[in-house]
Image (cartoon, rainbow, N blue to C red; front, side, top):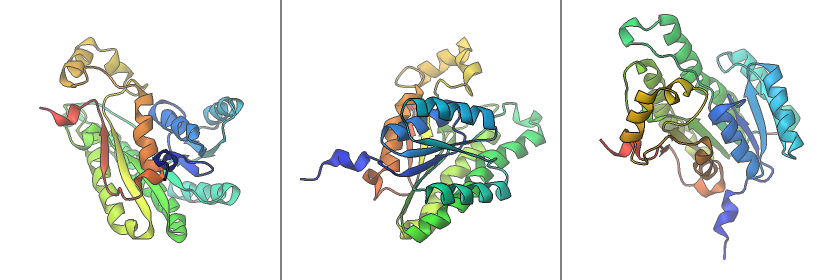
Length: 257
């Protein structure tokens, strides 16, 4: 009898997680490491990447890093080529890098709009296009795009962010349409409201926090470790026939009115 749990192990597989020095990205990287993957952290600044790699290596984990900005296509192409020459083909790509700006839409700074689009949306396209060519040649691979409850729901002051996350949901489906034939699974992982540095101001705002807990059926904020199970499903052989889907991990937020 086949042991179903064996499908979730990632022993020896190479995973790249963008924007993974802290917050959700780091939690996702640590989840992949716990399942046996070799994980490459990514960010724009050398010192925090080196420091985090050293911490994880001291714990006996197989981790490396790749320095590049997801908005810089030439930088990405060079970094991915160097990474694959050093460590081999990338088996798992997690597109996590993202930013947030909040303001009423009529007052929204056009420069912030452009930055959101370049990082949150263009960044997913840029990195994936560089990585997927090798996956197509090998006829296998897992791509997980980090979406959001804002892929489905709008909220005042974050319309541009919601626009990027809604676009990533459709880009995920488009990637499936183009690349599923090559044995590649492309899915989205959509967190609800989690306690992260990005959400610090909201967590510390009693009015918003109370509203969120009342609005969410689970009645609380999510903890980043609670994304691990969903990620390992989408990154492993357990999801070999799941494609073009978005899995919401949100305490039920998108299921109720």
